[in-house]
Image 1: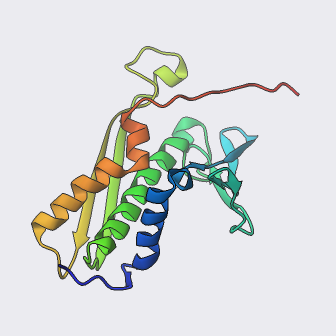
Image 2 (image 1 turned 90 degrees about the horizontal axis):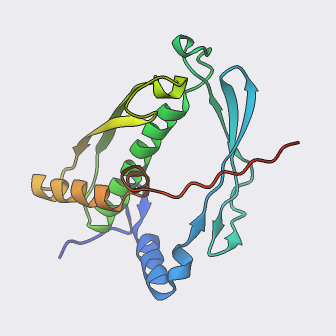
Amino acid sequence: MTNIAASQNGIDVEGLLATIDAVKTDPTLGTFTFRATSTWRDGTRNSGKIFRFSQAGHVDESRTAPFVLEGDEPPVLLGNNAGPNAVELLLQALGFCYAVGYAANAAAQGLELTALEFDVEGDLDVGPFLGLDGQRPGFTTIRAKARVSSPNATPEQLQDLCRYVQKTSPVRDCLVNPVNVETSLEIQ
């Protein structure tokens, strides 16, 4: 059996294992509601805030201030490059999610990571967004490429980890499986 350090890849392994045991004992502890607020500024520019979330029906107070994001389009799409556009943020979300999955799951297996990078790209036809004919308004294909270095993992272990992370990634799951999206309108 691999000797697993108390902290590996910046992950508190004992905390990770305790969290797994807690959710296994009480599955409601694994239920979260995440929130984001977007406010239109001008043209194609928006400001976003991510602040509180709920776990098991209770609001988490650990964040003292919201994360603030700026979103915009490039000039070719009538923006001013004040921030990444929404689909670029979606690609980044997949990269972030994969990285968390790799770091945490490698740590749980006692695998040390010395480098981990993701390149994520997607193909999109803006025609349908503009009301024109086309396949769909969203990505038709997303490609992710991982580069990983580990002094104590075999190539087979890293391939298994890659497959496992894809299987358990919440962001990938949202991208490849239908998700019910409910939109309401409040007229002011």
